Image (cartoon, rainbow, N blue to C red; front, side):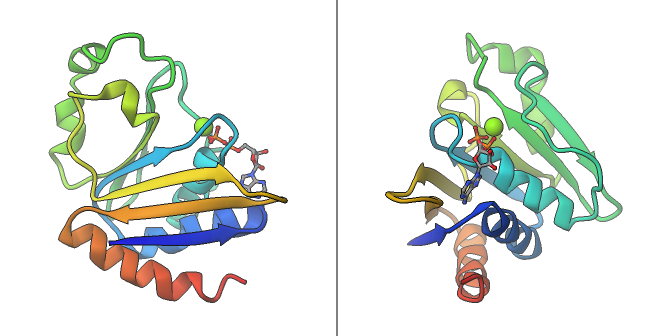
Amino acid sequence: MQAHFYLADEAQQVALGGHLAQTLQEGVIYLEGDLGAGKTTFTRGLIRALGHQGAVKSPTYTLVEPYVFDQQTVYHFDLYRLADPEELEMIGIRDYFDEGSLCLIEWPQKGEGFLPPPDLRLNFSLADQEGRDLQVEALSDLGRKALQQLLQAGNSLN
Ligand SMILES: Nc1ncnc2c1ncn2[C@@H]1O[C@H](COP(=O)(O)OP(=O)(O)O)[C@@H](O)[C@H]1O
Ligand SMILES: [Mg+2]
């Protein structure tokens, strides 16, 4: 199952991330798209919607940033600088996916072979004029359920 969203500005990017926080509490989300496509902005919207009030930055040098909430834990990965996917074994990557957490992974292609398959794949790109295009692919029952709810929420964005 696939769907397309148009996010006219940063506020909409943040808002849709917030909606996803309501529809998916655990699982694996791949965030694809070039530098500047809006992956971290979307993630910030999701994490802020759960109640985090501080900054949300791409953990480019630390690879992963945890956000612990009462009801759930979110791990935000950025694998952009990962030279060798085997490094993921060294940081004990499996443990992050084993505990009912929600994992958001920027640059998942850099970790190929060491990551679980995603429930959702999000691909961001610059739109023709301004804003961002977002293509979402759901790859599990959990992902399809979330995408259906996200479509309903997304209709109220514009
Ligand atoms: N839907 C949008 N429309 C216009 N600008 C956006 C949108 N989403 C994000 N941006 C802007 O794009 C820039 C890069 O976003 P960022 O989330 O850091 O990208 P990435 O993590 O993919 O490298 C930021 O300045 C942000 O404000
Ligand atoms: Mg980023």
